[in-house]
Length: 70
Image (tube, rainbow, N blue to C red; front, side, top):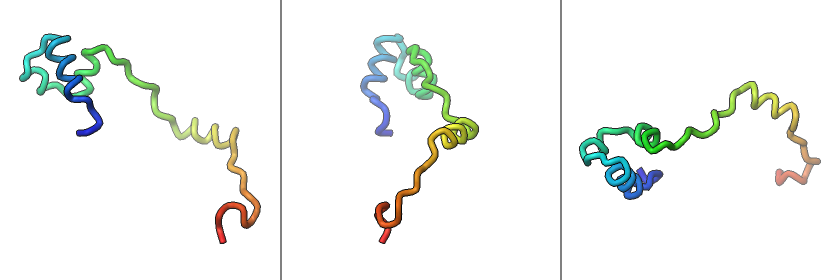
């Protein structure tokens, strides 16, 4: 996986948490992040919230010829 800084996570797990390599590799990335105290991000947007935002900020239709269509 290229989305993780594996070297940094390994340093944090092995040095910071004192895990053995076997313990480190048995963890899921989420388990490791929890052990490191990384808080979860905001909850994903719900359909109800998306609809609320769509009502509050409706798309505006551009006049013909101005939206890139031929």
